[in-house]
Length: 111
Length: 113
Image (tube, rainbow over all chains, first blue to last red; front, side, top):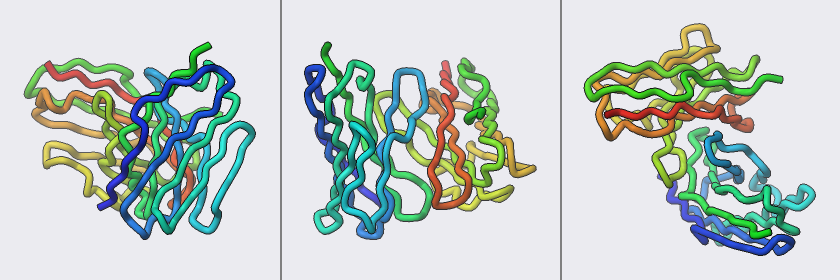
């Protein structure tokens, strides 16, 4: 099965700084790479995703980059705001539809 | 529009009891998923329905866990003879079809005493 690792496990940044979270996966058949944000007491919410035929995707302050050769993809958040504070999960998918989530990265944005 | 809803939001039960957790997917979504999330961990896949049938139940931990989706919409996750280790947040997600984005509900927090 898929082995997914996220780094770092916790990340603290000052408001306005950038944050980068990296996800490595083991299954070369993975072809869909989403990032989810989970706030306390809520379910995960998709914030951005990318498919294997694209190397980078950007949506306002959020971007995802993919390196299929090295089997990792990263979440980039620029101009961080306090409301970005949450736990972020990567969940690469092989098309099996059973997402395999990483262990999460707790991002804290200090005002 | 309405998102995925789950009931109850919280459930406290005693060891050995039977519980049912309900999921209402987004209207029109044919695919439905159950995940379990332990404290400080990412969600873990349990079962996936396409329509009324369980397309993949490989994540169910043992035969005490069972899920149904009789009319292809609402789903119920059933846990028999609950154990303290079953305590977790049970998340439901739905998607328009296979290979589509999964949208999650708020979860049911199950505590087994």
